[in-house]
Image (cartoon, rainbow, N blue to C red; front, side):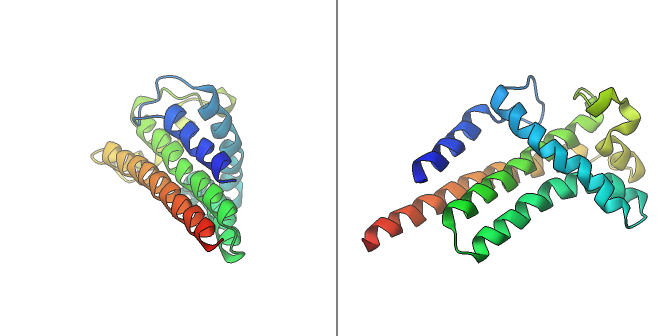
Length: 169
């Protein structure tokens, strides 16, 4: 399990974006992104229940973080270190994914689902609504670095957990 999860972390390190500007879609990253896109789109529907347009728009990115956090909570509660590490990798990987979408609000280069135009870009709409253009790239980079730092810390935790497991034997 440790070797498999370490491989997953390694693949993130190799194939996940190194900046908030995505130049191309590596296969490994694109595969993960497409899985998360389902949760993102479902979040718009889920948060629309509250009847607030801003929350409906933000709901996509919120749900993209919420679903892996719920998985993390369940694994952590059940004291499953492998599941916990995997869910944290998924959770922090979504910070990177959301950061790319945030940064793209200014550049409008990412393809939107269904070929929709710039009027459907969540983060463009949010930055317009809150006049947040002076801090859009700083917020995107903050999310990006939270994602990468979280991934590294999670692997360190996994390694220490694995070491302590074998010291008990």
